[in-house]
Length: 316
Image (cartoon, rainbow, N blue to C red; front, top):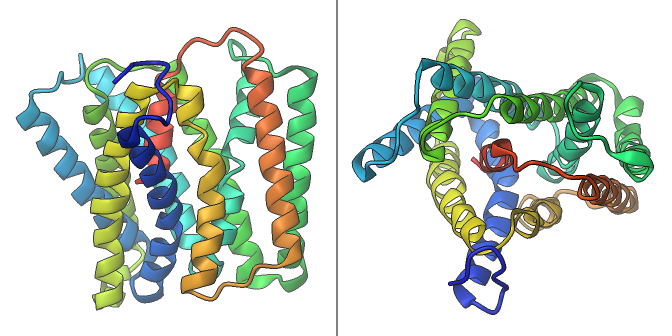
């Protein structure tokens, strides 16, 4: 297998890429199914604690390089709090009321927030005029998608606001990770992220009194197991495989397919409505993201350790 410039002519690479596109697109559906029966914070918290422990055990038995020092562990934990406690936690909370496809479309705005934060914060990567056009385009699509929420108000509007905040926190975590690279194996870093986010979510659920409402059902436990072993383990393994087989820019194109997969699965399995507004909004948002990404590739950008971390965390 060629490294760095491999194409989809290798069936193993194509299979891994399709796995990432479908599996990580399906996680929004699994979350929606899970929170129908299980309280959100404990549902997400247990999931990440188990995933973190499994990854930690796997890294240990494989002899992967451990973090260089305590600072690396702390920085990974902070990233986990941004991405998983704040970002994913708000996604799970919001999907109590919102369709899984809608959640995926709003989370697709993460690259927009990353570009905006990285442009504003000193030492980041500027986006240029094309990037600003992309930001305007992408957020216009968000405004169009949010319009029904403002009309309905209540939990619908709260859920949409939660998803926007989730995307923003994911972006903050990604930028922080880029500015605070850590040593050691990426698997150890992901394990620490998952444990930090999972412990914080579990503690939040316990303090919120969710334990009394935690009544396991077949659907709820099935969704949790799917997220742990398929969303995290299978998706993560496939993503690392394609990263070794092709440039990161090509590998990351899965992010344009995930929302489409999520919308289609929500429609086919949960009978979630697909409106003309949804289709137009999706096209506008993803178009804006594409413009921003193109703008960022026009200037020298150092490889970001956070690109792997953030991508994997979104799929866990």
